[in-house]
Length: 410
Ligand SMILES: Cc1cc2nc3c(=O)[nH]c(=O)nc-3n(C[C@H](O)[C@H](O)[C@H](O)COP(=O)(O)OP(=O)(O)OC[C@H]3O[C@@H](n4cnc5c(N)ncnc54)[C@H](O)[C@@H]3O)c2cc1C
Image (cartoon, rainbow, N blue to C red; front, side):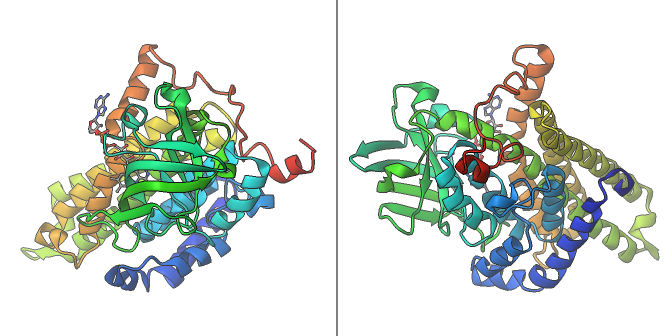
């Protein structure tokens, strides 16, 4: 496939592989054993430019685009899906909220440090009442008191909320106004009281990068950290989360490829009745199915990324790519575990946690059912997935440069 990609893409992939093989793979197990977030590795990945692909150079980005971003995410995830947990927080969801909806001053203050890996990001939308209908389940409220907002309520599945320096939190400012009562805030939990993040024990997932239940008790946010205006939060969230579906799909692809590589190696090494199990027809049938699904997934994801780069309608294809990639990761990890027999359940092999992550990506950033609703309603003509394309008034990091805006050039 490399023949059909822009010439810089294989070189980007090689640099990610080299970085992971020399900087991350040798030490990540140690962070996991200690339950310690690898902040120094996040900083090194930031310095290597892995978080800035979709942002302009003026905010520390590389301006390489979404195709580069998905290749980076795919390779990081293939090497170590546990480390990949930081990617969307540093390079997509969290900085996207700020870039799309923030003032130029907010963008310049927060995005460069996130992209450089100097601050750890976070984005908290989901509440205990449910993530698929995030708006309907939202009970957390921010109330303005003079120069600050006080936020009260609880959030669920807030990844990196126990580590974050600068994150984004979405909650209600007017509980009676539906989507128009939602606002997004830049949060700095290390500076202000009222923030308690409690890591959720998770079977097979990282102990270094944790996801959390989050309790907010008069948590303080300065008024200047509101993103956009009161009531803009839902609109910004929908826009900021959309490209994240494509990069999350790339992580799922990385999981599938890692599980596939392990399965192929094992099928060639494991000898039963004098023959490597890879010679058995039923194992070959699984290997063929796994390979075909991975290629299809990769084609969809790269196509979705190219649509984003070309500013073409991409909501429908992003949902298809995320749906297919999450099914593929689950299918391939499951088949790989079967090929490993009993050893697939042992923590001695990667397969056990690749399987856990494949389940996570089936649910996270929009469940498989939610993607199917988007795809089916578009196909049936009930709700076209790309009906809002081109109508957004929010800033897009691929199309505008905040630094020039500050100089009054845009
Ligand atoms: C490890 C992990 C990390 C996460 N990190 C973050 C994070 O950093 N920030 C954040 O905000 N969120 C995060 N999430 C939350 C994630 O986005 C939600 O789990 C997801 O949106 C689903 O919400 P839920 O778990 O509440 O399931 P629910 O919404 O309760 O759904 C339960 C089931 O019902 C199905 N369902 C729901 N609605 C429909 C429907 N209309 N038709 C048919 N089926 C339906 C779903 O597909 C699912 O199978 C994370 C989740 C996990 C597991």
